[in-house]
Length: 300
Image 1 (cartoon, rainbow, N blue to C red):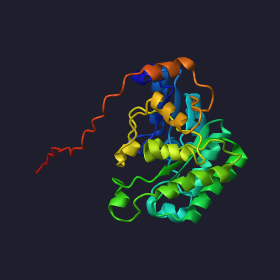
Image 2: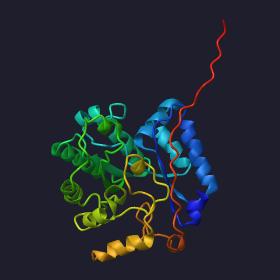
Image 3: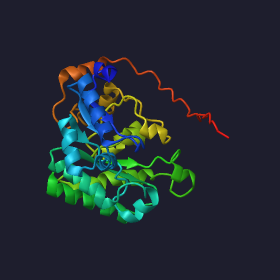
């Protein structure tokens, strides 16, 4: 964390799977530790699934737990684990996650307690275009009620290491045409309620991001340090996109690059300056998982 802030980072993003030993107190402790280490950093953390898990383990309502997280320093939530907000699809690709109504309830409650969130869609697996439409309209309807979404982020399905894809039960991600359509149609459907459409360079790469910016998107997200989700799924992108290179890509297509905060405020010039002079990151070495042998003792 301190290394990232020294490099100009303004946000730490924390999200993951459901660890069986984690409770709601675990998430509160994580928040407290981050804010004690770097009080000024924005904490963008915990998917709706993690929030639900935390609340359940403490016997709290979603609203009560979100209020506690906010009091400990949570700044905003990632609107991930949305996949496709249609239960016919969720029953296939993520039956162990929240259903559509539960996801929307957690996000809507977050907005009501004063926590902004992103909104995402993961597309290119088993869904059809009518599922895209249902998802976009669900996001639009919730935004009309709460106004809490900061941006919409289409995420192309990365199939290479996804278990369901390795079993041959999904497509191999969206076509490039579909990725272009998703960004363009999202701009049309969500306008003017959600002003920001983010193109994910971690999924589409720099060239794909540039095309997305030319067809509906207005945001490229952050430069990233130690991204693991896309790369674990098989993407070759994700580990840093230096600010100068990002600026050059944006300006090459006739757009103006403007650094911003997580909540779309004006970025701190001092933070931006640090990011521009940071040395390139060392390559991340992913240690392969190993099985742990347990010594068992038996009594006669």
